[in-house]
Length: 113
Image (cartoon, rainbow, N blue to C red):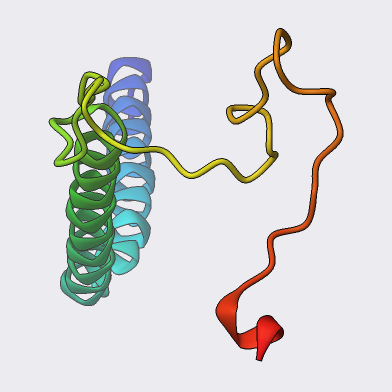
């Protein structure tokens, strides 16, 4: 064989070796994708669960915002001057001009009999 033929054969062998290594690398990568569908299904289920959780939490936040900041059924009612009050402390019945400031016990009819 001549030198040119040897160089040509050497070049062909190097190309074939490069192609073989590339093919081997691609086959090893392909074996990693064999479980791709199963992993995709697993991740899709996980994603769906997270989405449901997000929707539930958003609903809770909206409900709490309505409860805290929304329109309330309790309303402020202006004080009615005609409404009678109950004097729990005994202050309303005292007249400083006529009363001595001493509270006397109330005697009921039941106590008198």
